Image 1 (cartoon, helix red, strand yellow):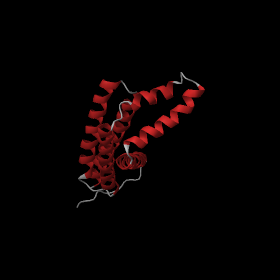
Image 2: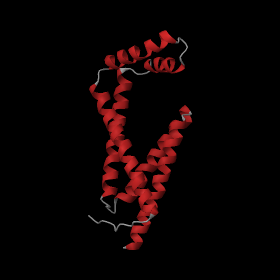
Image 3: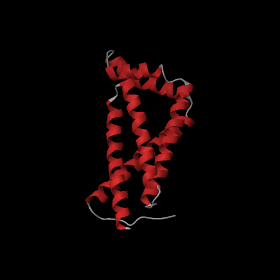
Length: 160
């Protein structure tokens, strides 16, 4: 397995910060996926109902509580399983790519670019369906990490 030489300039530090952020988000996604797999749907529904009930008693028009209640209708056991598997797979894939990048494995750079570009494509597709600003923000973060990965890969290859 070939490893690339390290740099210590500003772009390298930004690259390391970007992959560290990816690792944190990937860990959260993995934990959330595991929690969704391990928690019965009825328990989640009961907890969300309990959480929103006090807010709705205080303010029956509370927009956040109303939105959570509306979302509860879409979180059936099948949807919960999909989200659990998606978050778990997405998180574990990102953790594997980040681990390879952290070890400076040469093949990890094009792999990371391809994987993160796939995430951007999916997130932009979801944005067209939902209009969610979060999808745009995640895509922008991924685009920056892709650019930093490209710069790191190119710079490391030039250093030999």
